[in-house]
Image 1 (cartoon, rainbow, N blue to C red):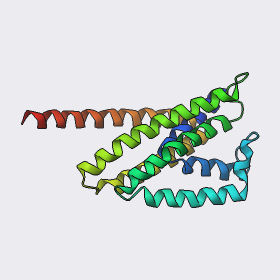
Image 2 (image 1 turned 90 degrees about the vertical axis):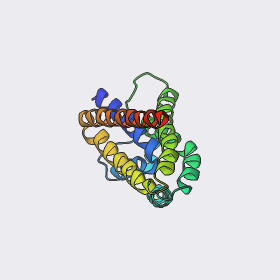
Image 3 (image 1 turned 135 degrees about the vertical axis):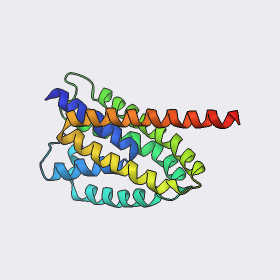
Image 4 (image 1 turned 135 degrees about the horizontal axis):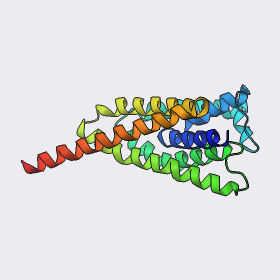
Length: 189
């Protein structure tokens, strides 16, 4: 059970690096429905006003992130929001790290979400430039779907989340190598 909680914490924090509001909203709704138990003070996520605010913020994020150029401004703003959400989600998993400072859980979640966010923020301008903005909406939808799937797997099927994460990392590495190969081929011309 402790290992599953740790995997859930990592999965939710990583998903927050892609879209802060998706895993927060999923956790808030599941906490409200008493499917999962949030420890204090994180149980405030289950209040209706927080859920409503998360829905509004999610709608704004989903729309803004699909617009080339505006998505970059959004990523700058989200540099604070996504790591903070990752820290909250990591720490909110009750019983993650026994006898450890809650600050440690917050820092781990913050660093993990920031790492995922940084990767996204660096890749997005490249996508926009290479596709003349056409790829932004498609990549944004892929990020949102990945965040939903990662969040749900992290909560309900931690072992499947690990497999999912390995596949995502593998695909990202292949894509990165392919881009590097194309750049090398272009520089030879």
